Length: 470
Image 1 (cartoon, rainbow, N blue to C red):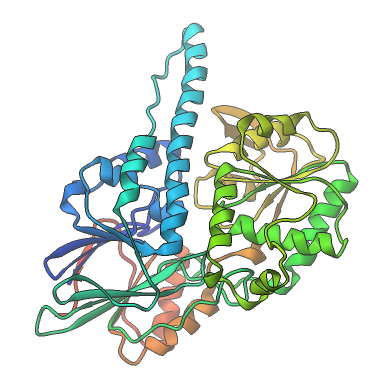
Image 2 (image 1 turned 180 degrees about the vertical axis):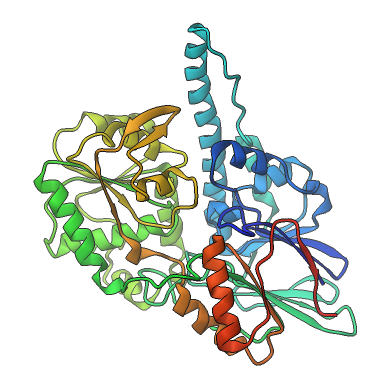
């Protein structure tokens, strides 16, 4: 078996790992790289291989940094199956089309601004979307839904099973087994591992024994704060912003984070712990994704299932309004008084959240509430790092709004949780490859895996290949 690491190697986004085994060339994930705009655009457009050279894709989950470049792969010749859980396939049906739509609309918006600059004697050239809605539509029929725990044959002697990763709805860890040679080889790709006791979805499954492991390391050098105080912290942000007459702008991933926030706000509203301000989910994708959540209660934990037993919608309550249309989104700017709006994207890189930031980031009464991991060089990361000025739609805006964070909702396992997940594998594990982490996080986790368990650990760079099982 041969592994080649292309994306999320030495960084967090753009997950893409190539596996050659059993006469097949597979991709584990095909995600969008997010970071500096020019770098991201170049990496996402220029795949390191022809799409036609890949036989199949196995998708760990639907987040765009893991699934979002599938239409580019298809555009460049890929026509094989895309294996994923049923919930992941349903989420991608909306997410890939939404991303294509955003790519087209953002390019149109920037080109309109460029046209005005051209009239002033400036010309930066037209912007082309990374891929089109047509490319996304061509991708969706390639999905092949698979069940948790049920073996799936990829080729004679090459099979895989998926297990619940507890990260978002439908997320999975992937176990490959190659018996085509005398020496059997087993490999697990953790995908993004979740945390125990988070709202909505089940906890991560314990892994089965394997010899090789590709492990995420997003928080390999950090410990999360306890999630028990997250409701109090959210209530505090809403209350203090409302008292000063401000608005709460919440960039949130449309999958997972938005539904978690809605559930917590539902709880706070029921308990009358926050004022009766309007609450909006302003994202067509989040609306559709929430419908997908309702369609997959088999993924829910016991606490969320209790809502269903009482006939209550966990993702809907009186003062909450979901917004699909852009015209309704724009009307929010004309409202008077405080309100809370949750909008995608989670790293503030595209979509409607940019318009909300544009309109609210310079008002000190407002709060920008960051609720998830922000990759290096993204707008969300700059806000967390307290940059005094940021660029939105190519123009400089002063950051005068309060910047708050809700780290407790992180859907990524922290250092302690990663070590606990790995520990049962130690007796047979021969090598660990750390991906999906910034260098400091990965190196810290690598040292701990060696010191505590004596494991051989590699932190691969993009393009490096390894022959395993020999």
